[in-house]
Image (cartoon, rainbow, N blue to C red; front, side, top):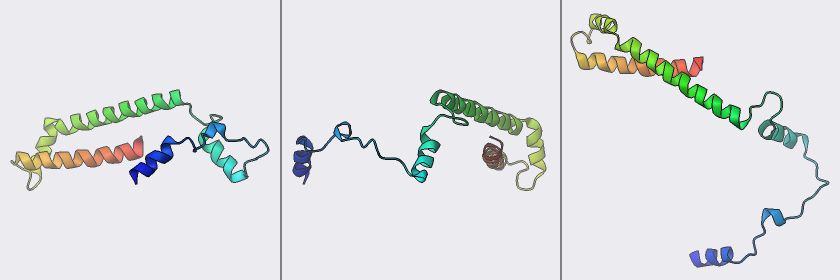
Length: 116
């Protein structure tokens, strides 16, 4: 089976896209035109590749800043005092740590989804 595939690929019977004839008279239908405008144009409201890369970096810095702020808020010793008042957390460092991780994850996901 593999030898048959090698034989087909080694023979140059497959046409390259550049070698195919071009139909200059073909016009896209409205649905095709809409899809092409949506994905392939850089007109009004579209972002270029360079701008999109800078937006990705901006998003990365926003998420890193958000994570840092949440971490600083939950690592504050005042928060430990509040958790010591709660049942099942008072005096147990592992339970407090677990609750802090859970709160951090929930707040980070919610803030990342709704704020950014």
